[in-house]
Length: 142
Image (cartoon, rainbow, N blue to C red; front, side, top):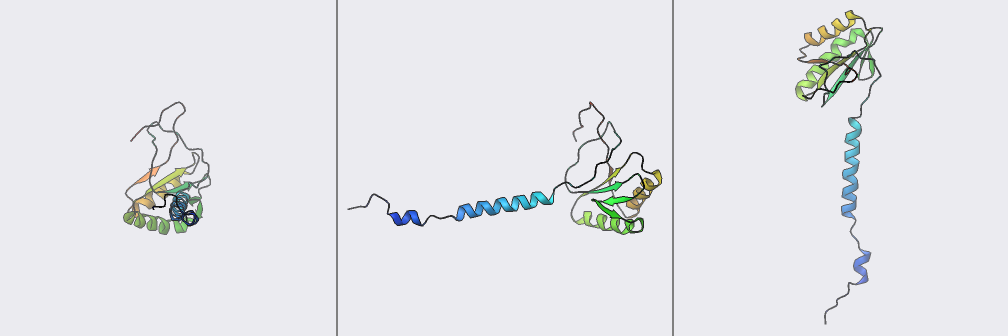
């Protein structure tokens, strides 16, 4: 005769492998998501009607009102800017990314020109200058 009821030993050996797999996938997702967390400082950017959102790997250069420069939130001395930009441009050739300049509205023009010139001299093909959207305008779509 056939036994139609499952034996009680089958219930004791429940397989939790799929649960562990799901937990590892969630862990990997949150670790990768944390790597893309936005770091930065608040700047009052000038507005532009042609501004639009960017995506992908972004390295931010912050030009402050006193002419000091931060690269992804880390202060960079003026004498070290050339080496830092050269490193970033080389890295973007291997793994694509964008260099974004966020300048305070009252930042010195001399410091702005210096940064743009350094990017050009190091072979940077694109330097995006961050602006804010004017009030009451919808963002442009690429």
